[in-house]
Image 1 (tube, helix red, strand yellow):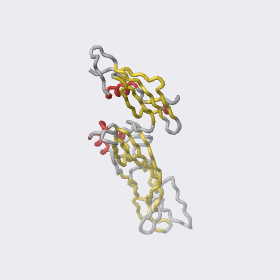
Image 2 (tube, one colour; image 1 turned 90 degrees about the horizontal axis):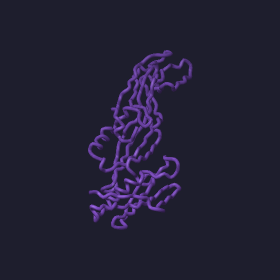
Image 3 (cartoon, helix red, strand yellow; image 1 turned 135 degrees about the horizontal axis):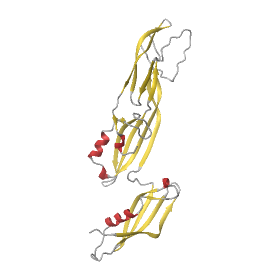
Length: 280
């Protein structure tokens, strides 16, 4: 029969620190209840810890805003008599606790070769009777050479702490099946098709520690109602690939190449990002 306990906060057992590293330490008296049927029964530290965690709150308030609450981080118990334990619970943001998340992002510029000016970007012509290439860039008699441009790149990572007992083959397989997929529905403020799951890595501290799972993503915006040359109503999701087929024509007695057709290719399958465990 499992022992029962009474847990009460120790008088004058609170400690607080402020500044950039805000912490709170709360001490408790964990007392095993006396049982007449088992007067000599004694508990061990596992039962005392369970009783302590059942009573200590998951978060500790430091002001009137719940957003500033400190999460429960680490704890310990010390036996001070046969049925009496001193429990200590620490609250801070320094410890990595289960289902807490960390975020990082990077925005930069990558290069991409384009062959076409896409609306609403404009082309300004100079010179007498300049031919109209319908937005094709750097055209000669035989080909559309295009130009390299800087395009925005948004990469971000999210790190989640997961208990070891939750890391099984089914969990790993669900992550594996989402690598190289784009979000099938709206997720984290992005529209469907804008976020690519670029990879997942995991690290564990010690034999019995929790897992730190890091998810890598890249985002690219969807575009709708694009016009290329005289071809209108083109829609392209963030990670789809658009290319233009050109044909030869003439304008102002000059041989030119103009858009004949536009193709939008789906390169990545869609996946249910809610299975990542990172919320909506």
